[in-house]
Amino acid sequence: MTERERQILELLKQDPLIPQQQLADQLGLSRSAVAGHIMNLTQKGHILGKGYVLAPSRYALVLGGANLDLCGKSQGALHFGDSNPGTLSASAGGVARNIADNLARLGSPVQFVSALGDDDWGERLLAACRQSGMGLDGLLRVPGARTCVYLSVHDNSGEMQLALSDMEVLKRLDAKALQDRSGLVDRAAIWVLDANLDEEALAWLFARHAGQPVLVDPVSTAKAPKLKPYLGQIQCLKPNALEAGVLTGIRVTDRASAQAAAQALVAQGVGEVLLTLGADGALLANQQGCHWLASRVSQLVNVTGAGDAALAAMAHGLLQHQDLAQRTDFALWAAALAASHQDTIHPLMSEAAVWRLKETTHATVS
Image 1 (cartoon, rainbow, N blue to C red):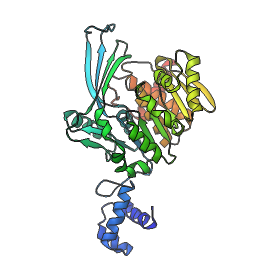
Image 2: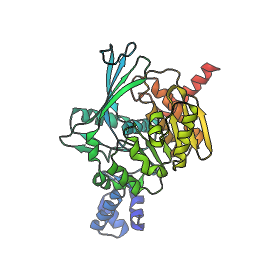
Image 3: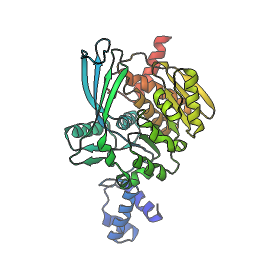
Image 4: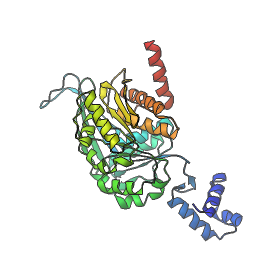
């Protein structure tokens, strides 16, 4: 940022509605010169949209998938190859979108970058994103495209048994689209990515990376391998057992193999590995060693959004300058809160609700 741009930004902070001519008069510039500086500030991400809406000083940038979640849960034991009685629901989803939604509900400033079709499902997702309070200045709408859909099937205990995804439109979030949003990218305090991004987008982002913390969800075994070239630039990686196996070649079947896989990821440069293991909790690994973390889930209704809530909480903790132990504990309780509701995003998700769950659970146990 130039000194003149800094002066203009300070005046805009004092009066976001100040006319350009008044700015020019105060600074001894022409109106056209002020307009040029404001355009540069917008491109650099210091000003968001019209009306001189200023970017928050520290915000998370979340990039990746946004889709409609179709969730089915069987009433009894799940029988493959047969019709199973159960319940069906539809809600806004997508790993990155869920993370951004949770982050906004936790109280963190967040900008979400994804691609949506211009269909009815896209309108539904857009409304859900706006309702959560996330910033959408970088959202891409693609005329004539189909909005992403994710279909998951769960057994009667709530555990996911099968999922299908249609994420074709996200390929439109390519290097050119990201370059057009470079101001948002460069200004972000942290990045949160999911592996729904294609190879071109990931390559552009990590080439652009300037040292800010990067948190990543591998999404699935099919998409996780795209992350291999960038493991050394990732501060926090949140794989499950299958994804860790694909990334390391180590089949995770027990504690010993889980620890070996997590340590292998750290050896490849990942700063922190939060290896989630469902009902068995999680394993946290970094250069200092491995720590087993018990699950905080006491009421399991739908596990789909638990991992998204956990990574959002890790990002929230980074923005709040929490240390690793604090943000990991917060992440596990956020996951427990998310798993206690049928919707992928708990409608009452907030920082206060997470801590309240921890307090009431401890009170019940004691």
